[in-house]
Image 1 (tube, rainbow, N blue to C red):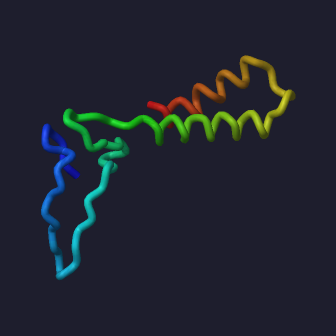
Image 2: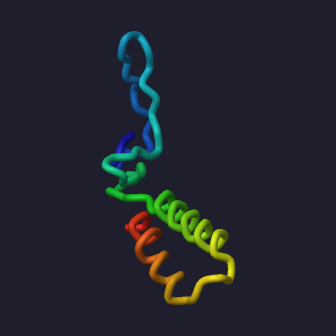
Length: 84
């Protein structure tokens, strides 16, 4: 993956044990997805997807049985860390 003004230029392939190392558009490093761009960019798509998946899971399990305070507390304690 290339980051910088020449990020869209075709780079030479890197061989490791006679196999080509693939060029990718994003990598995951310490839970943060870094995207190929002319400047350093991070993608939040995976974090948002995980957050919405956990919120929908809580809503699916509780349906309409819990109060608003309980739902807000569960979302704050279980779902928000996935976003942050």
